[in-house]
Amino acid sequence: MFAIGIGLWQGLTALFHVQAFLLPKPSDIAVAFWDNKGSLWHAGLYTLKEAAGGFVMGSSLGIVTALFLARFRRIGAALMPLAIAANAVPIIAFSPITNNWFGLLNPVSKMAIAAVLCFFPTMVNTLRGLTSVHPSSIELMRSYAGGELAVFRRVRIPNSLPYMFTGLKIAAVLAMIGAIVGEYFGGPTNALGVSILNDSQLFDFARAWAGIMLASAFGIALYGTVALVEHATTSWHPSARSVSTE
Image 1 (tube, rainbow, N blue to C red):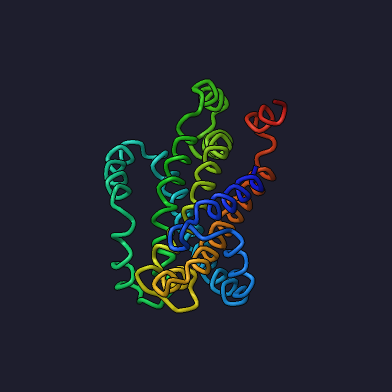
Image 2: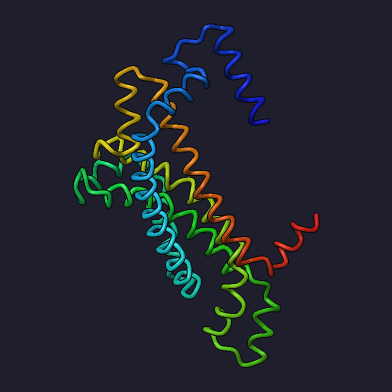
């Protein structure tokens, strides 16, 4: 299907004489990538480091926050509207602020944008997994005199893993988006977002699309890495076994 889609893209843009500023041909994008593979790859790796740093920061904070809110439900009920309100703010509005906080050329400013995007899906999904435990499991732990720590360690956290990895896979894709968006508001010239923006302003649309495709590939790679870790750590879970048998 992927090859068919590329073939249709190539054929239709040639048939209807679509201008490059609207949509370049895949062949032109491939040539642009090959001719500039060194600089594009270097810029992509730089942005990937920003995305990975933001992913680790935001996801870790999201998991810790979910554990805290699952333990103290009343505090969680009070703070959840604030978290939803913060998530509703367009991420593009945070970029100038983080650039002022950490510096325009500091990669931490882009990591912060990626972290904001990663925090909410990871926190919400992990919290859902921690709180959607069947009451009979809790009652069984109580019957064995299990304390709150034992309930979390043996019931809530194992139950939350599939939910948590769902949030992490969403966050893995959003991390690359956050890093690119942050770079649109300024960054070093060796950053992929800056390279895409500069190429667009110079009307080198094939090279700009080559950068976009590289960013997409890195986003898919981050998603695939999380999926591999999920498969390695949750193969024992009933949900994973039911999927594998279908």
